[in-house]
Length: 154
Figure 1 (cartoon, rainbow, N blue to C red):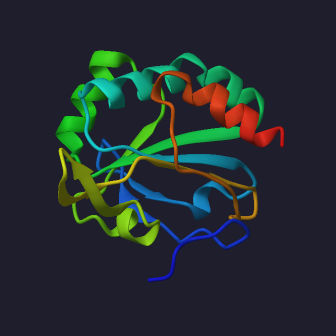
Figure 2: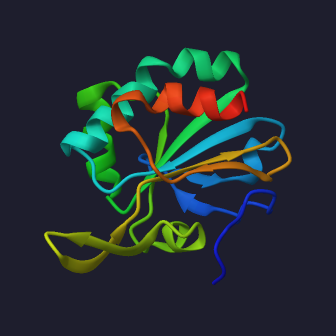
């Protein structure tokens, strides 16, 4: 699959959230979406990122955005993560990695000189018509909301 670029139609999503409820990108048409991909529930960087988005969630809503997180964790893991950190937005349980692959968020990573396949931390800002408006590939977990708002002001 070719790499997703700004200006492209965002790949459709047909998945389930933390409660097993169907979630599609189409249901958010008419609203902007911050779709962020993260490696694992309850890990330091991912928790910092989710809490930063949580703390600024009302600002996202005021600006007409919905926030949706995606990882390969299962529904139960997402439920625990949401409960523990009071996460107010939906998390996609992408256990088959289809959404991750469609968005190019599954790929080669390096740790201590060794290569392995894993989830790439990326954020896609999708406009009201489902078009990719911005892609953030160098996510700052502790100030991700500010990073998103700055990207949108360019």
